[in-house]
Amino acid sequence: MTHISQCFNSIAQYLNTPVGKITKQEQLYVRTNRDHTVAGTINIIFTLLKESKSTLGGKDPIEEALIHQWLDYALVYGVNANNNQSVQSVLQQLDGILATKTYLVGNRLTIADAFLYYVLLNIMTNLTYLEKEKYINVSRWFDNIQQDAQLRQKNSLVNFSTIYLANLVPVRH
Image (cartoon, rainbow, N blue to C red):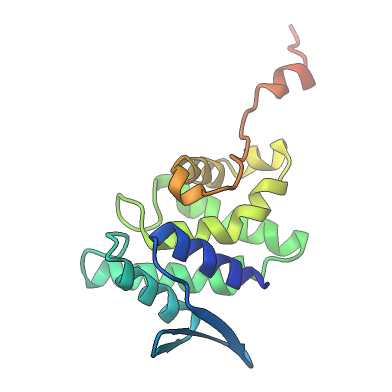
């Protein structure tokens, strides 16, 4: 199962809606649920959102557009962060953007936060404590998002504790 397919399954489970059948035709993901077919990753996410009657969508056209942009970002950069250099680049960009934000869009959790959480889960799980501190704003955002047990599902909480630093680097007087 591809990373995107896992994200679809996680999003569908979080939204409590059937994922349907996901196939990949060349470079395009296609979802079939009953007699309805939707093509394209973002279209599939928005369809799952609509079917769930969730409030994680945008409240107005501006928020909808921002959510769309964040989903694009997650697909273009987050999903393709498969080496140390690209991971560091994505985390650095996100860290700057999240310096003044609690959520990606507006002042509440949206489907963009949920999707980016699933995209970054493996990356954040494998970061060292020092890397988590280096990207403190991403770590703060991720830790906030993961506190939603329904969103986290069966995934373990990623530990962001920095208490170990007191033992690792002794205080100098």
